[in-house]
Image (cartoon, rainbow, N blue to C red; front, side, top):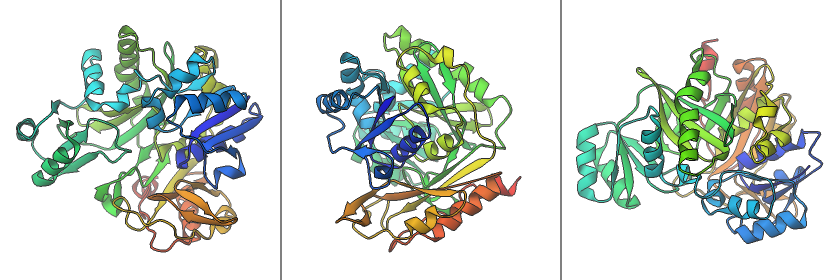
Length: 416
C-alpha cells in the first residue's frame, strides 16, 4: 500500500511513524510534512484544503490510502473530492465533518440521538450570551461555533472574560460546566461498524496544575489505569452507536475517526465535544501503543471493512508525551529559533521526538515555526517509567525560551 498523509504537525508525524511500522505499507508521502516526517516519508508542498490539488497529488503518486490529519481539509470537503475520484480516504466527508465544524450542529445531533452531554444554548448576540451565562452559572463555558484549532473554548470563573470571548467569536455555544476528569476516546467508523481505540487523557491548560489558558494540548498519556471498568463499552452503547445511527438517518454516513471528548461526571460519562479526526497530542500515545498494522485498519473505514478487522491488538506498558512549546504560546509564539538536542533525545532508550511545529532553515537547521514545537514521547513497562523517559528526553532538547508542563501523567503514575 502507498499512503499519503495530509498535515504537518505532531499528529501527522505520529501517523506517518505508525504507517512506517506497518509491513503492508510500501511507501509514504506527506503534505506538507515537516523536518521530522522527512526521515520517514517524501514531503510535498501543496494546499491541503484544496481538493483538486490533493486528488492530483494522490493520483500522481498512485496513493491507495489518503489519511487526512487536520480538521480544515475535512470541513473543506477534501475527502469528498478523493472519494469522487475513487481514491480510498481516511476521514469523513464535508457534511459529516460538521460534527466538528459546528459545535451547534454537534449539539443538535447529540440531542436527536439521546447522547448524554452538557445542557447548552446557541447564542448569536450579547443578550443571548448574558442569558445563557446567567442560566448555567460559573464556571463559564463558551465555545466558538466554528473551527478554532483547539483553542476556541474558554472555561473561566471570570464572567467578563467569558463575555469577551463570545464577542470575539460571534456565534457561540454556551454550556453548563461538567465536573470530573476528562477522557479522550478515538473510534474508527465505516458507517455501519465502529471500533474503539485505547482511551487517553490530555492536558489542555498551558501550565502545571491545570493553570493558564487553554491550548491545543500540552501532553497526554495512555492507558488510563484509573478508568472505570466497562467505560469504553458504555460509551460505545450510549454515545457512539446512537450518533452514527443518527448520522445515517440524516444521510450523512460517517466514515473515518470520531473523537469523543468525555467528562466522567458524578452522574456518569458526558460528551464534552466531538471531533472528526485524531486528537493531538493523544494520537501520539495511542498510536504508540497500537500493535495492529494500521494501514489496512484505516483503509477499512472507507471500504466498509471494519467488521472483518474484528478487534485491535495493543502493546503492554504505557506511553507519555510531553509537548515542548515556544515562548509566548498559546498567544503569539516566538518563531525562528533553532531547535537543538534532537539526536540526543532520540538516542534515549524508550523515547523519541515527534515534530509538531518545525521547519528547515537552510540545509540542516531545524527551527521552531509553530506554538507547539515538539511532542516528546516516552514509553515503558508502566506510566512511571514512560514518564521518566519522556522527561529525560525533554531535558535534552534545546530551544531558547521554550517551556513545558512538568506534571503530565504525574498523578496517574503516583497512584500505581
